[in-house]
Length: 253
Ligand code: TMP
Ligand code: ASP
Image (spheres, protein in one colour):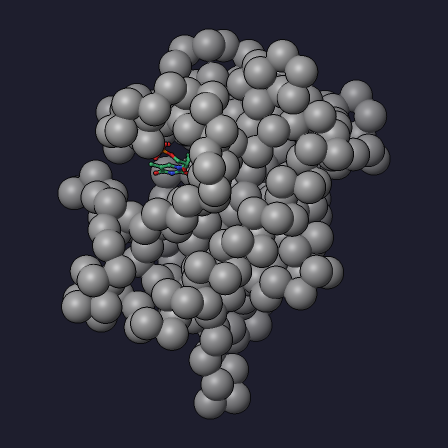
């Protein structure tokens, strides 16, 4: 592992060169940051859980026809993915008011939104990922009008899929963040879903109790972060091969 070429290191993940051209290895760390790096922590076992949850979600999306970067899981913390050119946007989709939407617009957390809302943020840590409009995206060539249409359509399909998947296991999907990339293949380019989908990138509330089962437990110092992620995994039937949900490292792949 140590000999592999590191392509990029982010807050919660590392990307290494993959075994074949056009592939990368995505490694999930236990590190967590929030509020643009002002809050940092390490949550033992988080990377293992997010790797498995994200695998489960991406495999399900692929089966329903949403193209993604996911190829296969390699081991406890790593998955093989297609290399893409990341579009510098964070696409947020909201079903229920929470977080920055509640803060900016004064809508109480927990209020159902009249319809799903899709927002774009410019991926730039130094600027704190500011919200942007389509006008900015096309003016600064971050994405074309056609690509924005594709991002919107795919995001709403992901929302339908995730909402159904989570409600079936007693979880309400409040909101989530997606990232997309351009995949080049045989002179062709198409936009595919990239990054991860996990309790780090979603707000998930228990359907009955409204208990938070996502990264807000870390952001807001509620405790029990990994336990909540493990409960999400358990309800989805992920990690069934490890019934004790042991989060210790396995020896090899
Ligand atoms: P927000 O309410 O803070 O704007 O977050 C909306 C959703 O996007 C929430 O599920 C958390 C997720 N998110 C990320 O995954 N990364 C980020 O950098 C931000 C700001 C939000
Ligand atoms: N600020 C974002 C959050 O609260 C992400 C981050 O800074 O890692 O999740």
